[in-house]
Length: 598
Image (cartoon, rainbow, N blue to C red; front, side):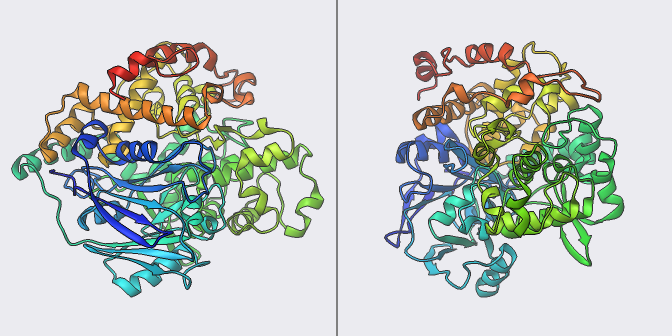
């Protein structure tokens, strides 16, 4: 199999056993790799009703067929499991260099089963596989863990690990690789922690076989040219990082402020990519084979650290009413060190601030913590992040995520979440298509399961009326299916600003020697999305959870460029089910499943 390593590494932590299995060609044909193959294996091998922290739940680290190849951005991997945050399917994406290194070691996927008897880490050095004692690493921060393992196994080793948040089973814990690249959402780090698995260390020296090296070289050069010449991937993201979006989204009046109470703020520029570049930036950074280099390295308190991404800046900043980029950057640093999803961490803190503002959280509850819960308090921000990651004091409640926190006080509607996962940095009241994508995302509130901001705000591939509901169901399905393809190939979603379905088909066929058409490749994405939906339905996550928070459906945006707008989800959702070939209850019809061969 060209592109693929052709092998699965199955690790039973409870029995301390490792097995190498052949990767099915038929499975790859139907589900591509990465997100698709990982989701299919999870669907086949666990009961969707399993408790996420049970040893019966599995965690799958899955690369795509283009991971570790010359394909631009071919370094991604997915962490697939049942989410402890949403109880739906989780499939979290990360970049850096770990995914490519796993392919170089000769494996497409790692299936992690059971629960170790004590803290362990997994060592993979090509054909040498060991489950090793990690007692000396338990409790350590991400950088400490990574440094220690690289010192022991060599500077070329790539390390994936959890921090204290994952160890303490925070439902918003993430998996970190390469120090600051995160498989961020849905609590995948807590599932890893529940298995007492601290880290995976990989060193690979094998190559990835290509179908036709000359053809691959030509096709890759063509796609690199498109990426370098496009204004978003060739200029904007490289110059200012993802935080270039701060001013753009704020100027459209969809930049959520203070737990989505507002959607515009005149001081947003103080936390923008432009401001970061002027005041804090020292250099750019890039993931494996990435020509975009959207990563930021900044200087903070005489130390070089990873700069925050757009979503992190918003969640830890504007959503908490904070417009101090240094405070936000420090909070982002501690989220990485503790192994915690920045979006959920910031959004949960924002909901707590509103609960405090409205009198639900009393002063005596947080008095011992010695920290303010007022919107805009940048000095308290870092303190709360640390307490959340360590489950100390009131931070223990915050570690459960915003929905469970707000439910404790009898007002779950204060949680700005879908399927109990916190919404990202775009107010759906001013982008109707993105609101539909939020509501129907298989992993809960999410922007990278169908980034309709691309069309509704940026105008790629064409400019859509962001306030209109017309044809938004069709566009949502298209973006969701294409995203499933990109995630499964092992590429970065940012490539979709410059590349289209034809480009992905050409890359896939050239590298793997396939004969997919654009239609059959997109159908594979549709198959993956429908399979995830079936998993959720069996897990008890049904159409009643295809909904947005009450505030976004009923309360219009109070001021700014999108003043007076509210979500029109109920106008679009029935049409979306119809476009998807689903029944009124959001269940894939027999005809759809038959057509997709599920």
